[in-house]
Image (tube, rainbow over all chains, first blue to last red; front, side):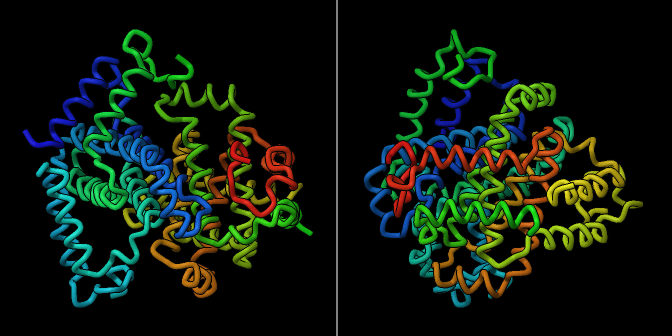
Amino acid sequence: MGEIKTITKKIKKFRDERDWKQFHNHKDMALSLVLEATEVLEHFQWKSLEEVNKHGILCKSDIAEELADVAIYLFELADNLEINLSSAIEKKLIKNANKYPVEKAKGTHSKYNYL
Amino acid sequence: MGEIKTITKKIKKFRDERDWKQFHNHKDMALSLVLEATEVLEHFQWKSLEEVNKHGILCKSDIAEELADVAIYLFELADNLEINLSSAIEKKLIKNANKYPVEKAKGTHSKYNYL
Amino acid sequence: MGEIKTITKKIKKFRDERDWKQFHNHKDMALSLVLEATEVLEHFQWKSLEEVNKHGILCKSDIAEELADVAIYLFELADNLEINLSSAIEKKLIKNANKYPVEKAKGTHSKYNYL
Amino acid sequence: MGEIKTITKKIKKFRDERDWKQFHNHKDMALSLVLEATEVLEHFQWKSLEEVNKHGILCKSDIAEELADVAIYLFELADNLEINLSSAIEKKLIKNANKYPVEKAKGTHSKYNYL
């Protein structure tokens, strides 16, 4: 079994021991994914890029917890939707490579429709 | 090498071929993580739980792409911060198990400070 | 002076007394607007529509504070960008009326491009 | 009638002509508030502060529309919850003044619990 599937199995065990599947509809899962992602972002609010770098080092373990929370919802939501996250990422990277060809996208942060 | 590290390596190859590391400071990465998470959420806006379930089946491949986008930023951001996402998740699950003991948390969606 | 302008003046007085204009670039203001909006959303996480209604009554004063936080960033950001929020809303309502004509949009939550 | 109430009345007229109250539960309204706030934020993704300033001028009318969308949900949600937004803001500014006394907060972006 792949790493993501192994972790997802542990996440579902945690959930099912608490009988929480009843609350984990896709809408509340997606909502929770957003809430956890904003807790990552909150770490960098009002900070200059220099402060952002320092904070990333000083508060590494706190940020690690927030990223873990995002991953926990992400992995479970993908599983609930019967999506293989690993192959979804592989496919998306191929799609992105077509949207952002190296010769056009190199060194610019423009959206693909402006390239 | 674990699955998450293998995928992260591909993400970084994609990024570096386009010389995009210069834009990928932690603040913009966290901001992008939030934006992608909201694109997942947008799929379920205004929908009843019944419609949410139907939509999850009908639009599975579109949602898979949005989840992949979240994962792509999540995996790269963790790597940029030198965070081992896999072990961060393991640690967080243990911490959550202490915050939400089965006997107290079973069948309720209350926050741990209200248990 | 209109109500929004009067409130905005007070918000700017509060900001300037603390010499905070230096941090209030448009990017951090928009980021903060998102963070405050998610604090409103957090109130309704995991709740059924029945629980949502009860919570809206029981925690009215807490939610009022979160909505105020959204408004405070919204009004200042509009002002910083030299946008007249009041007339922007009027214009957007007219645009929305064209995107969602009553005869097509009545009783459906479909996006305008699916009507 | 105050400006915010007058605008809110127009928003509700627009909504009721389309029979949309049935979809506008507090949870979906808060979710929509977040989605619109992220559309503001998206304008500033990947941009340096210099680019952010230029973009704020060049794309002023597009950003005005996004801010209007945030305001439209904010004003209606407050009204649905029977919250007087104007007085909620006044109260919050007083509370913030106590949390962030000028002598401590001047020139720093630290959170009140770190002052």
